[in-house]
Structure formats: C-alpha cells, structure tokens
Length: 572
Image (cartoon, rainbow, N blue to C red; front, side):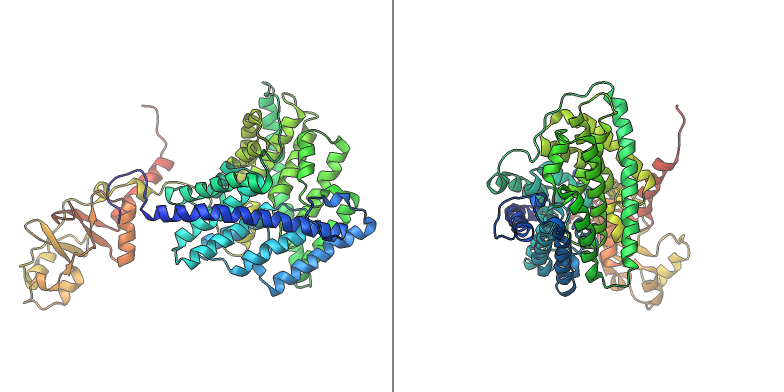
C-alpha cells in the first residue's frame, strides 16, 4: 500500500503499462489503415464491381435503381455475421466499449477484433451512412484487451489498454490526438488518474506521429475562418439552443425507431437488411448521403452547397442514419453527427450575424457532436483538430456548451448510454473526487482509543466492558504504547475467564493504518479483510498506537461533502 501524502496515487506498474501503450498506439494505427482499406475495397466491389483500393465515394456510381439493393445485401451479410459470428459486432462501437469496461472487466473476444472491422467495412462499403471511427474504436480496444488478457493484467490495467487502443484508433482516423484523449476521459475511462491518462496519451501520441505514414500529413478538413465579431455572442447562444434541441429530438427519434424494430415479428438478424432498404431508397434520391461522407462535411464547412441542397441532404442523411443505427448494424456515429451539425450550422448561417458561414458550420458540427454524445470538451477540441482553425475555438466553446447544457437538462441519457440503460445497466457519468480521497486517516480517526493490556485476564476484561460505552466492539491491545493486536467483544465473552488477552487477541500483522493514509485506503483495507475497525500506528517500525478508525468514522468525509452541497450560507 502506498504511504505518504501526495497529489496522485501511482506505482511502478505505470511504467510497464505505458510501454505497452506505445505498442498499442502502433497496432491501432495499422488496424485503422486496414479498416479504411477494407472500406475502400468493399465500396469498389459493391458500387463499381471491381477489385480496387481506390478511395471513391458511393455517390459516383451509375447503378440507377439497382443502388437501392446494395445496402440491403450489405445488411444481410452483416446480419448473418452477427447471428453466427458474434452479436457483439452490432452497434456503433462506443457503447459496446463502455459496456465492456464497466460490466465485464474490459474483456473482449478475438471474434470481435476480427469481425467488427469486417462487418463495418461491409456496411459502410455498401453505402451505410456511418463513419469509420466507431468500428476502429471497438477494434483497437478489442486488440488491446486481448493483449491485456494474454499478459494476465488486472481489470484496471486492461481497461487502460482497451481505452488506449480505442483512442489511438480514433487518432489515426481523424488526426486528433488531444480530442481522442478527451474522449477517453469523458466517455471511456470513468476516472482522471495518471495510471490511465498517461498510457492513453502515449498511445494517442504514437498514433498521431505514425498517422502521416498511413494517411498523410495535415488536417482532415483544413479550414480558415475569420475571427468572430461581437454579435457572434448572441448568435452562438441561439445556435446552441437550436442544436441542443435538435440533439434531444434525434435521441428520442432513435429510441422510438429502435422500439419499432424490436416489435417486428422478425429475428434481429434481418433488421440490418430492412435498415439497408431505407438506406438504399434515401441514397437513390441523395447519393451523397451514402457512405462516410467526409467530402460532404468538407463542402458544408467551405459553404460550397446551396440552401436547398443542404436541407435535402441533411434530411436524408439523418433519416437513413437513424434507421440504419436502430437496425443494429455496424458503424460509427461521429461522422453522421458531424455532417448533420455542419449542415444545421450552414443553414443557420443565413440568419445568424457576427460570423462567416464557415464558422457557423464548424460551430454547428462541434455542438451537435458534443451535445449528442454528452462529450463537450471532446467536440470542441475535435472540431479544431480536424480543421486546424483556431479562430473557431471560441464560437465552438460557447455554442457547444449551450447545446450540451440543453441536452443535460432535457435528456436523462445520451445516444452513447441509452442502449446500455435499456439493457438494465445504469451509468453515472459525472466525475468528482471521492470524499474519502480528500480526507486523511488522521482527520477522521479517534485518537483517544480504549485499550487493554495483554496481561489482563478475560474475567477482568469482561468486567471492564460493562463500564464502557458500546461505541466499538473491537479494541487495541497495547504494551508500553505499542499495539500488539486487537481483541473483539465476542472473543472476550466466549473465552475462558482464566485466559489472558494475549492468548486470544488477533495479531496486528499487516492490518493497520498510518495517519498519512487516505480514508479511501482505510475503506479498502476494511473491505478486503472484512473488518470494521483498524488500529492507526505512528509508523511501521515503532508500532506505537496513534488511535483507531472505524467504518463509522469513514462516513465523516461524506457528511462534510453533503454539507458543502446543501448548506447555503449568508455573507459574513
């Protein structure tokens, strides 16, 4: 157990986990490159009937009405893969990663690592309106989890590697290492500690450096906007409210459509094909709504589309994405949210003063992503990361914060957690320092402990117990101030009167605390050893008793924390 007052709780295993994270950063970059190549191959096969890795959009196809059947075929293939391969490949990746982290100790199967990228390549390559980021997050996380299981790491270390792999995969796809680290903090780690943050940051940094070899240098969607004017302050507030309300509507629509699929008298294996039919119909009327759509997002950011085209494109994209996602197929949500947000921002640019159309598209993109995912910091930094436009940072900050505030007030769950909740698993996403970690043992212990001498016989001890208040049931046994053991009320009353306490005491051993331990460390030791009271010693060597700490004492920090939250004080 680590002793001494310090800012962070770390040990030397951080070095080993960090070294593994460096390796995982490289592995996830290779996996991202493989996934993009598979998507390109599938796109060429489905829409152009050729073997090629050329990066082409499905919108350039010349299939006519036959294009409606392409996503149906892709949905059938993925349905079969999920039914007879692994059901875990269903969904867009991030909720499945969260579920693995929180409820199955960060264990993922080899099947997921193989089938997730294959199924996603089939879905996106056949026109599915998804991004590649969700599948690579799941794939990178799966590979890292398998490595952690192979090395017999504990659940916390496996979680760290899983998130490192997931975040590195996102970095490789988008070139946004800082946003990927923030995504880890806001969505996946469920803590903010050096033991996890350092390895995740290292993995993302490695992926960021290697990305230039896999995908080239420069931002994914370079943009340069003019600084926002004073009127942009009011406009950002309006845009934030509009996009926040839209995120609420989108979340409710997704939930309603998922319920509709669940009521169908068909096995879920067939749902992706039905979703594919909706995709095909939408793609026939708006071909640019098919596939990942990074080129469409870039056109929206640069104000290259007319108002009518933007409205039609976003309406179709949103519709086919919601039906495809609700059908349980495989694909990411970030790219569709970016497109919808950028489109709404581009529409609002015609009425909002104080900024250029490009600025409002960028702010809308960040706000939609942050409010729908419940990850505002990730979205703000992400928008700047993929554009390298620092002038958009302030509008992104205000618009996204307002939109996120709206969704937190009106939604109990985000798109990321709603599906997990409906499976009976509940998640609380707020971060805060544990009150037990803010308190030291010396702050909550009882320094004036009732002690017994080891030479006292049981009969005398029983007599003394009758005169003591029943605050505790376990007492230190001391000799010249040194704690040599603990004796409890039951042991005294069940022992022979002629025995000495030295004969029935429980030796201290390693079951003690120092005043410099945290209250959380005290709680952990009590829980591990099923004890309700522990002696507190001055040092490991001298064994001098400084007091005792009980489970009731551990309630004091929580009571103080409640007082800080609930008690309102007047100006003094």
